[in-house]
Amino acid sequence: MAAEYAVYKGGKFIDLGTADYLANKFGVPRKTIWYWTAPAYWRKNKGNSLIAIRIEDD
Image (tube, rainbow, N blue to C red; front, side, top):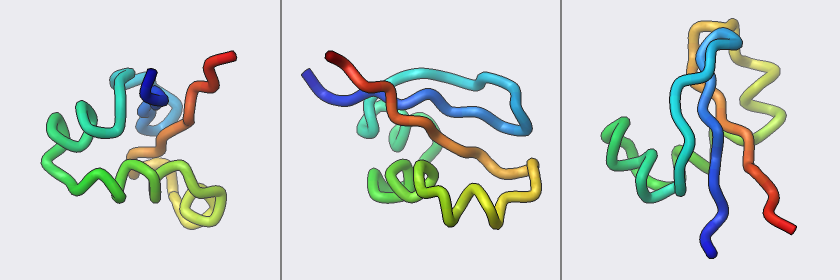
């Protein structure tokens, strides 16, 4: 099963899905979804950008 990501903007939940699904929804390359999960990106984020959190499946 592919990993899923929760996408937030300013602390508000936007959507949940695979990197492919979210890339298609937001019109960005799949690698952008992965970039949104990076702590370095979060530190630069001023609360106006989308961020993603990878949902671990055990």
